[in-house]
Length: 457
Ligand code: SF4
Ligand code: SF4
Picture 1 (cartoon, rainbow, N blue to C red):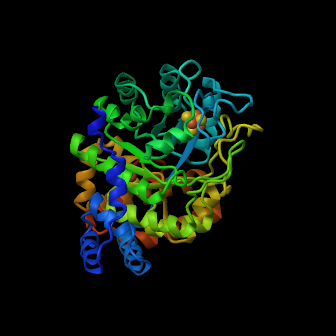
Picture 2 (spheres, helix red, strand yellow):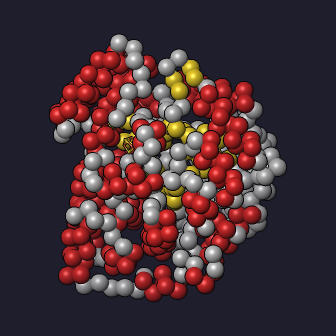
């Protein structure tokens, strides 16, 4: 890709950040958002500097979108760190190459032992994570790990979707990932501002801003339909980053017909050996604003927060945008089996285990979902987006959430849990609008009780 035609133009973004829209213009943009039409980057720019009085309406619309498109379900996943070898020096990360600790990559037996634990926790969807190291963690090793994960079945437990978060790579390697059956390919941009990017990425292949920022182009050329972007909020001005995300999304839509499948919104937090002063650290208030803005701008893109946020924050963000969270997570290599001292990538704020999180979600009236149906039904890329945009996605999300929760409660829930889950399921069945689907869900709930598994729409 020619650098001068690059989709991230620093001076253009800075110019957009000076936009001052009138109240009337803002209201017009918000009317559009309220019709679930999404917003282009110029419209987002007009909202970014809006006064607080407008944010009241922005939060309301974000909540409405969340409810209308995603309903009450929250998809759960768990990260699985397979290797912490890394040749990069990212200033904010505990895995950076100059941090000295016993680095580790999992053997296939160790992968099986980690996956066994994750399956016993009820997880069906993993995000595979690895540092970048072509010698210690080459693509063939990653592929072998994915195969081992898919092959590992424990009782009724199985991992049905492996999303992959590995360093930017070549079209050939992306093709291999596609062939082995990954779900979403996730790569955080970290920051869209090139100077800041180079400041934080001091050494290693990740330092190449253009190679990193064009990774999704290569992933899509390699046949991967679903890509998940993200920014590490706090490295640079969050307003700039939102516009970066929007421009990146539009670029992918224009070139490949489909933008981000998901956007992750991690926020900078302390990690060992990391300078704790981040001038652009995002306050709780701004964080809520940015989640709401992204939600109304790309209503059909899933939004993910990690274990780093506190319970209170998760609760607020789920209302205005977040559709996926991790549960019972470990961010150490081999961490589910044995939490090793000294190698943690980040310090977590929410250390409750998966059971607690699932129960907490139910108490909030939300339906914890272990659904992996779309990917397995071939509803990926633009096929997924057209279903989402037609508004019909809700007709499969809620039913699948109820069925996977039932499965979870039958296989892993105690009496208290099952009682709560059954009560929640009963209360949500009437919300399924399509009568045929509603009847099918009731039928499938009985089939699950009789021992069948993996029933989905
Ligand atoms: Fe390595 Fe990723 Fe950490 Fe950078 S962020 S040091 S690439 S593990
Ligand atoms: Fe996600 Fe599709 Fe399942 Fe809905 S039906 S939760 S979009 S996999």
